[in-house]
Amino acid sequence: RELHLGMFEIGKPLGKGKFGRVYLAKERSSGFVCALKVLHKSELQQGGVQKQVRREIEIQSNLRHPNVLRLYGHFHDSKRIFLILEFAGRGELYKHLRKEHRFPEWKAAQYIAQMAAALKYLHKKHVMHRDIKPENILVGIHGEIKISDFGWSVHAPNNRRQTMCGTLDYLPPEMLKQGAQDNHYSEKVDLWSLGVLTYEFLVGEAPFEDTPVMTQRRITRADMSVPSFVSPEAKDLIKRLLVLDPEKRIPLDEIQRHPWIVKHCVKDAKRSSGSSKEGKA
Ligand SMILES: O=C(Cc1cc(-c2ccc3c(-c4nc5ccccc5[nH]4)n[nH]c3c2)n[nH]1)Nc1cccc(F)c1
Figure 1 (cartoon, protein in one colour):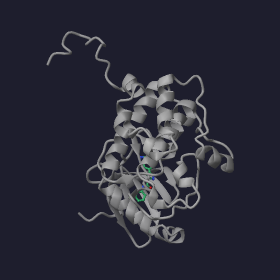
Figure 2 (figure 1 turned 180 degrees about the vertical axis):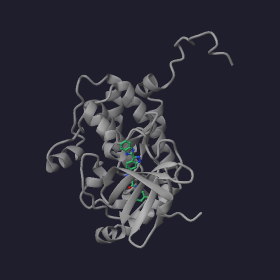
Figure 3 (figure 1 turned 90 degrees about the horizontal axis):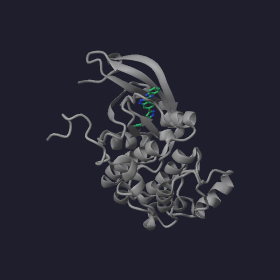
Figure 4 (figure 1 turned 120 degrees about the vertical axis):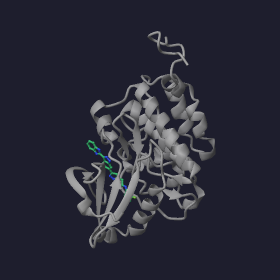
């Protein structure tokens, strides 16, 4: 079936990314609700990002995971490219984080467990995200998180110098080292960013937040301290992720078995089975 704009009823704006606006949309014949992202070809040309957008479309079209935002399809007209993206019922995670200042440990642990599951899926497909931060995470209608915006994701290894705007807070040390050879780092970069994310969920600010020069210096020295209100188990996981040597970072499999994650995410077997009808095979 030929996709075109007339198929959609356009609703309220949902947000605007670096290259385009996103609208709530409904496909007329099926009533299917989605997020329609509009990218202007002229803007992409000016930004020199057409190839990156094509790569992102190619990567995201093939991803299917409950914690990875779906790209259902795309089409274009003479001036614009349209992306049919999954609608996330509870919007952008960073807005929730700013409003709540920081998340309770049970919520942070559930989010990190879902991130670890999503990253495990992506890494198995040799896709590393490379831009994990609250701004790139959406929340579904059931409170589950969805990683989006694979603008920097690549099939490992890559040899593309990445020029990035935006925050340095999430960059791992190996990407900051002078003359770092792009293709010398691996999926382990996402583990470092997961550590920064865990810290920010629990503390409400990033661990190396400072002036740009100081942030870079603190990252390359892993110079950060965890406030005393953070539980010892959570602190242990943060410390095992924010390790300078990429090879020494706790692997994704071990994250899902980490005491802090297990404590908050595994259904508590001891909890009573409630009314008599429950618990029967
Ligand atoms: O640009 C993005 C990522 C992206 C996703 C979104 C986005 C933004 C907002 C939403 C929402 C959403 N739900 C809301 C509920 C309440 C309030 C606001 C909400 N926004 N659902 N899905 C979305 C998706 N913006 N940008 N992907 C992309 C870009 C180029 C090529 C490609 F294949 C993918």
